[in-house]
Image (cartoon, rainbow, N blue to C red):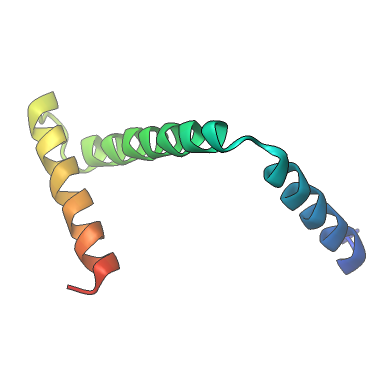
Length: 76
């Protein structure tokens, strides 16, 4: 059974309302935590793509990947 559009809209409104109630400081901390989680996932992917590569090399590859993402985002 698929949820109705009305139910989906109500869930969305509830999520937005709850997000608006979170203090700004918590939002900023959550942003940093989210970034670290994404970096951890990227490291895992880089380890899968480059088996046997050490931690320093993974960090270098991660830095390059983040630089590429920044350039893509800024349109360079």
